[in-house]
Image (cartoon, rainbow, N blue to C red):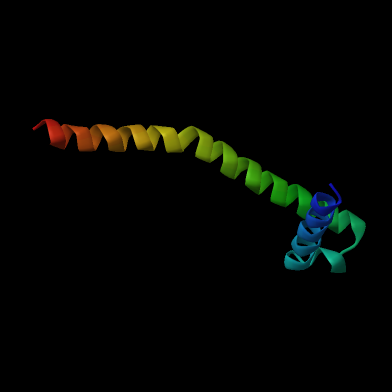
Length: 68
């Protein structure tokens, strides 16, 4: 369990380094966190909605050639 906690702390530290979040004030860090969470939420939603539809259409497209 301690290893998992250390790994999560390391990931958070890496995130703060990559986003330069260590240099910002607390309110600026919160804005960056909200922005990053919003981007990842929109990415997850878009993936959930559109990937199955595109896979289904691609499957139908290739099955159409196999039947002919």
